[in-house]
Every structure is written in C-alpha cells, then in structure tokens.
Amino acid sequence: MIRSILADMTPDPAADRVVPPTGHTAWLTQFTAGVMAFLAVFALALSMAAGRLADRWEDALARTATIRISAPEDQMQVQTEAVLALLTTTPGIAEARALTDDEQRALLAPWFGPDLPLDELPIPRLIELTEEGEGYDSEGLRQRLAAEAPGAILDDHDRWRRPLAIAAGRLQALGLGAVVLILAATGAVISLAAKASLASNDQVIRVLRQIGARDTYIARAFVRRFTLRALSGAAAGTLAGLVVLWLMPSGGDAAGFLTGLGFEGFGWLWAWTLPLLSAAIAFAATRATAFAKLGTMR
Amino acid sequence: MIAFDNVAYSYGGGELLSDVSLSLAPGSFHFLTGPSGSGKSTLLKLCYAELLPTAGQISIFDRDARGLSRDDVARVRRRIGVVHQDCQFLDHLPVATNVTLPLAVTRRETSAEDLKDLLAWVGLSHLAGAMPPELSGGERQRAAVARAVIMSPDVLLADEPTGNLDWEMSVRLLTLLVELNRMGKTIVIATHDMNLIRTAKSQVAARVLRIKDRRVQLAGADL
Image 1 (cartoon, rainbow over the protein chains, first blue to last red):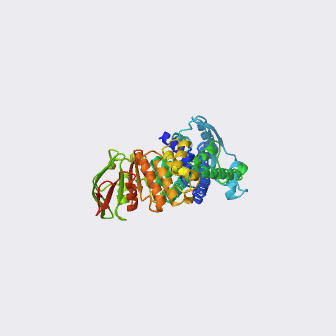
Image 2 (image 1 turned 135 degrees about the vertical axis):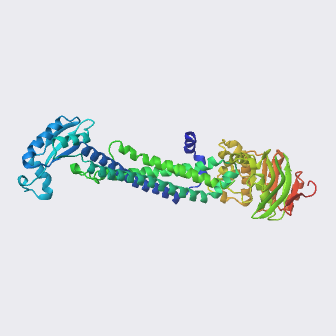
C-alpha cells in the first residue's frame, strides 16, 4: 500500500508531460484547496480553543467548592466553626476558609449595589474550599455536614460545571465537524476537477491505452498533478490562516473566548496536518476518479 | 498469433459481424476489405481487444481475449502496433516524443540512435521536433507507422492508413509496411482501395479478406 502510494507520487516528468497542461483547472484547484485550508485552520482553532476553555472551566470549577451556611444569627458562628473544623479533618481538602464580610459584599455588589447592609440582612455565610490530590468524597462530606451543621449545604459546582463542559464539548465537536466537512468538500471539488480533466483528456487516455499503457501509469499522471496542486494550495491557505490568527489581538489578561482563538504549543503543528490531509484526500479522490474513468474503456 | 473462432459481434441490437473464423499466421500479410460500415474497423478492434466478441472466441497470442485482465490487455497491445486513419497523436508533444511514447509508457529507455534510424526509415528525420498538427497527411501516417513499430511488435494493424493520402504517398506507405512484413511482422491492412491491393501484388504474397453480409470471405487466391 505504502509502496504503491510512493510509486504514485514519485516524480516522473516524462509521464507528467503526457497529460497536457489544463490552464484554469490547475490554479482553480489550488485556489479551492487554499481557501478550504484557510477555513479549516479557523475551524480547527475554534475547536482547540473550545477544548482549552472546557479544560480551564473544568479545572477551575472542579478544584473548588462552596459551603453555604444558613442558620439563625446566634448559631451562625458556631456552625461556621464546626464546618471549618470538620473540613480540616476531611481527606482531599487542601484549604478551607470562610469568606469575610467584605468579600461577600463584593460578591453581591453587582446585584445589590456597593452599600449593601450586610449586618441587617440574613445573608448566608460562605466557606470556600480547595481540593488536593484525588479530591474529597462529596457524598460523604454532605452526610457529615448534615449531621454536624444542619444549615450547611455543599455546592461542588457540578450543576454549573456540567452544562459548561457540555457546551464547550459541543463547540469543540462543532469545530472538528467543520474541519471534516471542509476536507470532504475539498475532496468533492478535487474529484469534480479530476473528472473534468479526465473527460477533457479522453483522447489522450485512449491513445495511451492503445499503445499499451497500464491503468496505473495513466492514473499516476493525474493523481500526481492533483495531489501536488492540493498540497501546495492547502499549504498556502494554512500559512495564510496561521498568519491571520497570529495577528489577532491577544486581549492580554482579560482574554476572552474570541481573543483566545488560536493555537498553543503543539497546536500549531496540528494546523500543518491540514495540507497533508488535503493532499491525502486529493490523492484518494483523484485515484478513485481516474480508475472509475479507466474502467469505462478497454 | 490471432485466431477467430465463430466470432460474432453485435452493436446496438444489430449484428455487425457473424460467424467469423480466421487465423493470422506469423509473418502473414492480409488485406481486409469491404464497403464502408461493413465492420473492418470493428474486426481490427477485436484483434487488439478494444472490443470483445458477443459470441465465439478470439485467441490473441494463445490467450482467450475474454480472459485478459486490464494489465494483460496492456501487455498484449505492446505486441500489436496499430495505425489509425486519423493517427491519434498527442498534439502537445513533438513528433519524436509521440513516436517513442510506447517505450515511455513501459518505462523503457529510448536509444537516440534507434530513434534516428527509425525516423530516417520513415523519412521524418527533419521533423523530429515538429508538432503533429504541423505535419502533412502523409507525414502523419509515416509517423504513426514509426510509433506502431517502435516496440517491435509481432503484429501491425493498419485501419485505412492511406485514406487521406495521395497515390504517391499511399505507395510509399505500402512499401514501408511490406518492408516490415519482410522483417517477419504480421500485417493486416483494412482498406477499400483496390488499387493499393493490386499494387501490393507485385511486392508481397498477400491474402485478401472481404467482409460481406457480416461474414468474412477469402477473396480469391493469393495476390
């Protein structure tokens, strides 16, 4: 199989000359492969950014939890201390601390304004805890809280985390799906171009068969041509896409989802698989089209 | 080399050839004649497996034509040179490249000396670099003969090779084909030019096969 592919792609100027130059078809194929690769770069970047976002959310939310204590005012301090004491003896918890009044006020300020009279309102006390290692047993902790501090409720952020993770996962799948569709469209366009080229060279193919050329010899002339066009076009499109991504504003510390669109680390290498995939698809599409055409003649 | 056994060929619901039995012996020279549309070209195409019989059996180099794979067909055609009336060149390639094309597709080296001799033999030495559309009818036919024989085939089939040529050029082409026959090649020429057949009489022991009423008949004694 690999030997056959290498044979198909080995340069053979004499065989390549047998098929006449096709003018517009040549640069249209390259242009299409380039545009498709350009779009695929963005789809891939979107997918990878969504993946990173999901990981970030997952990590940030999964490593912390909140315990909310709703108790009468005279029991609030007792229950808070009981919960903190319980948390120090709970395996998997690195740190636990009660939020100060100022911190709670800051949390509520966006909804109630900065002058919130915290002392006069029955605001629950919040305890923030951070996991370590494998994390804690949330169900066991809930049972212990119910026994020792009936007003304490554990919120492990699961109800927030799950829909966010699902949404990010879907966005990631959507990006990958777009890459697949773009590559499929590349294959379809190249297949049509190859079909047109084979049809316009019908007489050439007949002459070659007539003088004893095997199907592989004839097909290779077309396969090499379209594969190299797809490779060069897609490489140019990928490069253009990467340059545009690189030029996008980073957003600094306040980077949001859109400003975080791009590749990180080895992600840049993943983008360079697009020209190779385009070439592989062009190879397969042209080969299938060529052999289908050759199969219609003796 | 090539043998037909009760061969029939139908096309579009009608039978074009029927009950054809013949054998092309090594080194033989045959003319195939008959009116236009009688099936001369079809019979030649059956000889090089471009078409398959709808009935009967064709043996090409001792192999059943129906049993040939596509690669086998390619290999068989390397042993059968074909000259068409329209020559069928690749017009974007020079004459020399067209002539050596059968070698190129089989990845064989072209000897510059052999090519020079071959082009000299067909009288086209000065046109090696010319493009096919620049050639006259006679030059094209001679180039087509050169391409057909460059692989040193066992059989050479010519389909109306003199159809577009004047008499002088037709005789010149016939002479080339007779020379090939003297080298031991089997020659079949499809033509309706009786003058050409009569002219061959003085040069070679040829047999004339006539297609009439879908059947192939031996037309008289050897010329």
